[in-house]
Image 1 (cartoon, helix red, strand yellow):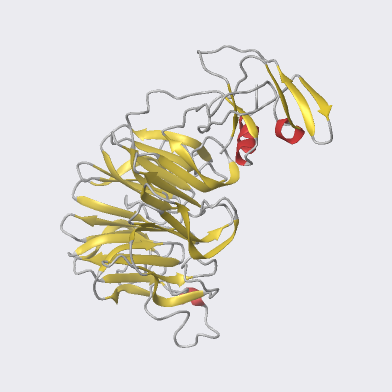
Image 2: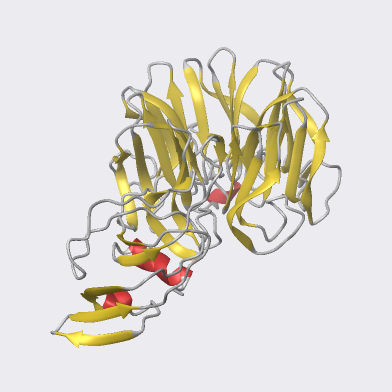
Length: 472
């Protein structure tokens, strides 16, 4: 039997592997909502039946499955129904139910769950607000939510004023009202927060050490040469743009927003090109236009950014050492927007080192860092720099016929996880490097680079089919 992790490694290198499995009963469901967070190494998503699913780091119970294991590398169902929205923070998670109740799980040491305690963590969902909540966002160690009356509420760490309550205290472990009405959208970054009002104005509070608030300040305005940038912040909401803003996204140390004309704007840290302005500057402390029009959605990760255009194409820029841009070439990054998927993308979410997106058919795709299983593909490994489908699990697809026993012409895609087995017998001529991780009955030299492999492990289980495949 072939080792699953080794087969996955072969697939990633576009080599040859063996595929045997197919999940059933999933075709009717689609994914409707996704949420890694710009500060997180875990992911949540919703299916069309209202069920909540989670994967990735779980060291502090942030998946909400009742445990605090290190990670879960496959999607795990947390709740069966009635969930309508999800948000992911550094080590905590939030979700809403159809009755407008707010629930939380994970790290609580800074009060970010809002449950009235500073306990270390909660590994099961607990209700925070009984009703009336309409939107949620989770930052590094703080949380924001909106109520149906347009009021903005916050809880958690406030050392940089990110709650916007006029203080820079250690924080609060209970929800406190920040704005009484008129707020329409919220986004929490690592140590800063953004929100929109009904007049289209953009407001910000919290740390601005890299200009992520976009208020024209950076470092200490009194002594910018010798001061420590970490101490530059505002603890009250300040207006950044007066009107015309339609969407916001707060990342690790940068911020994005859209205007009503479809233009994309950015500010903050640019060390890895995450602003996408084509420069190598470290940061910008005022909003700058990145794309003139046609942008419909945005997501800000730890040090990378994603956006969608009206044609359904997915674009990315910034840090890419874990392959989170999905362009197939892990690197330090790109400082200009790069097209990743040409069409059919409907929603995006960016984590610390990974990315998720949905397609128009309701399928969930992932790319980037997978060192704690945050992609949910059934493996724990360093990175995966290509978009891979997570749900529904791809079925083996026969691409073309096998002309002769030594002419490998099968093509297929591979789902996450599963059991890899051998059925029947096949003779193949392949480079040794492609077969060394697999269990074989014989390996004989054939020339300088090729080896003849005979696989004769005959197994019959569950009527499953055996395919020899070459990954995409």
